Length: 324
Image (cartoon, rainbow, N blue to C red; front, side, top):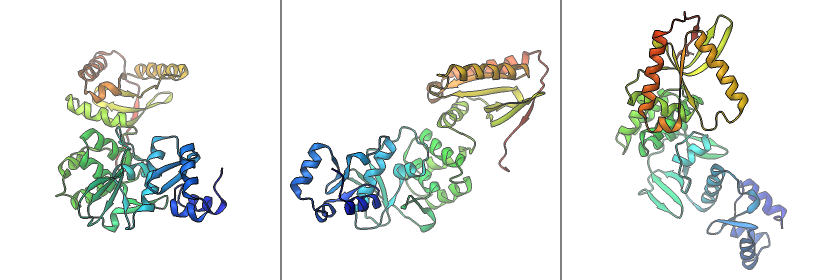
């Protein structure tokens, strides 16, 4: 049965959830509420907070944010969505995010704790580190990235930082400013490593992981998102490019070549790059995350092929710069 109009409007204004008290005012009694829960028509989000089954999202991110709305109906004091929850609202990429807990931060909350599916963080919240997303008060992207980087391993922190930078949600200057603010907080040293290494040119988590692997394996740092042209015009924009070695490195995402036409076009592109005097090697998620020595072998072999190639280079490149 659909909700009565007034309760439906109230639930919509609250982005889905409604309280027991609101349901009782709308004409439901306790027995009917329990029957609707047992039948699956309603779902219990928290004690005394419900939503219609039909409004529960199908995706992990949406299912994480619906309980946030329920939490906000329960808590009496103003709270700020933070950490994983804020990153989800900002659509910042994360490495294997744990959506089982809703994260909120309050200034002077007494102590950090986990209670009833909510991680309550106790930390300073100056106004310049806050913003609103979908009507919700959340930590700003730079603060969100630093909160994640302080509590996660380097790979996870870098993926979040580079995602926010590439999407234009924040800048390195803003990240450094937040880092100065929380310099004596737990994990700030780890966060500083992330900020020092972060690039705004990584367009996927895979590219962030690949950059870590290149450094760990002793390879020179490549340029990113370089456009390569031959005498006939544009060939490709490449994930990584080593100009001194005339070599392109490409990250192959999961399922990238499931479409035969995509595979065919990639082959044509590679043939054209090699004809212009550029060598190509490819890496994937598994070997990048493992920092596999296979990456170094592939790169050095490509460098050597380029050095021994008899092809006279006929290319020009357009390299992105921080002045753009």
